[in-house]
Image (tube, rainbow, N blue to C red; front, side, top):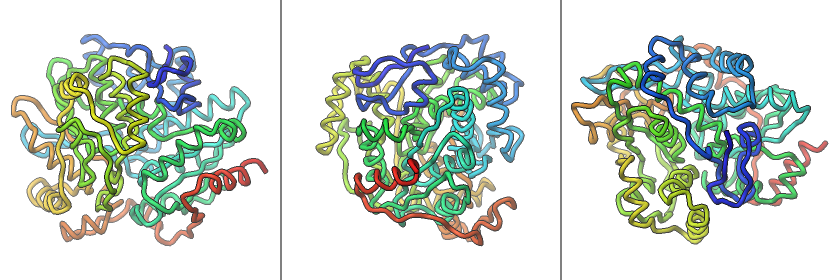
Length: 462
C-alpha cells in the first residue's frame, strides 16, 4: 500500500512514512494510491464484532507491512480502552428512520478521540522502533487540540504544540488543552481565527529547513491516519442497521471536511452509502461551494459551534483530487487560486462532487431551536454541532433509507449554548468534574511565523 500527494510532485510513501510526515513536501495531502475494497461478504462478516475487531478489519488493508497484525491489533485495543461506552460509538434512535451516532464517549468528549487516541499509539510504536523523536505541531478550532494533547501527553517520543485561536474556543475546550501538566505538551493561544492557525501550521511544514531541524510531524486531519481511523465508525454503524443488505445515508457536521471525507472513503471501499450530507453553520463555504461551484473565502464569523468556524477546509483538497480525475497539477492550481481568495470548481468536477454529496446549513437561531426541540421531543441533549447535523439531516431524509447523523461532541463541551437553548446546563462526566479547578498553563502568541518557529525551537532543541 502506497500513498501519493494530491499535488503530484512528491514521491509515494508507505503508510508509516505518510503518517509520520503528515503534509507532503509539495504542499499536498497524502491519499492511498488505490482504495482497497471490502466485498459484501466481508462487510456482512462484521456483524456482531466489537468495535476494535471492526477497526482492525477495516483499517488493516491500508496499513501494509508498517505494523504486524499482532502489533496493530494491540495498538487498537489500547487506543479505545479508555472510552466511556463499551460500544465505543453507540447508535441512538431519534425518530423513525433517523439515528444519532454518539461519537463523544472518548477521553475528551469529541469524535476526534477516535483518530487521535489511535494515532498516539501508532506514533509511539513507530518512533520507539525507529529510535526517533518528533515535534508535533497542530492547529485546532477546539476539539483536535484537546484530543491531541490527551493522546500524546507524557509520551517519550514526541513534543506537542497546539495552536488555537485565542478567545474563539469554548472554555471547556480551552481548559482541556491548558490544564495537562506534562512538560511535553504546549498550548499556544494565537491571535486570529482558526484559518490563521492552520495557515501558520502549513507555513511551518513548507519551511523545509525548520521542518527538518525540529523533525516536524502533524496530526491535524491533514494526516491520512486521522481520516483512516474515522472510516471505521461508518462501517460499524451501517452494519448495525443492516449493511451491506441495507443502504444508509449519513449527515455530518463538518468544517474541515475530514470527517465526511472518511465517509467518502468508506463508500469507495464498498459500504452501501446512498448520500453523504455536509452540514455547516453560518460559516458555510462548503455548502456554498457544493451549491454554486464557487469556493470563495469570506470573513469568519464566531458562532456557538466554534469547531466549524472555518473558511479553508483542508480535506476538501482530497476530494477535489478525485473530482479532477487525480490530476495533481489541476489541484495545485486550485490551491494557488485559493491563496488569492478562492476558485471556481469546473462543471465536470462539480458534477462528480454532487454525485456523492448533498449539503445544508443552519443559522444560530435554527441551531438553538434544534437543541430545544431535540431535548423536548426526542429526549436527546445535543451539542450545537450535532444539532446542526440533526437540522440538516431532517431536510435531506429519504423515508426509505435510514439516516445516521454524527453527534460529534458531548453537550457539556458547550454548556452556555446548550443551556441557552434548553434551560439545562449539561454537567461534565465525573472524571472531569474538577476541570474548572485545575490550574491552566498556556502561552499567548501572535500571528507571526518567525516568532512561532523560534518558540518551538527553544522548547524542543534544548
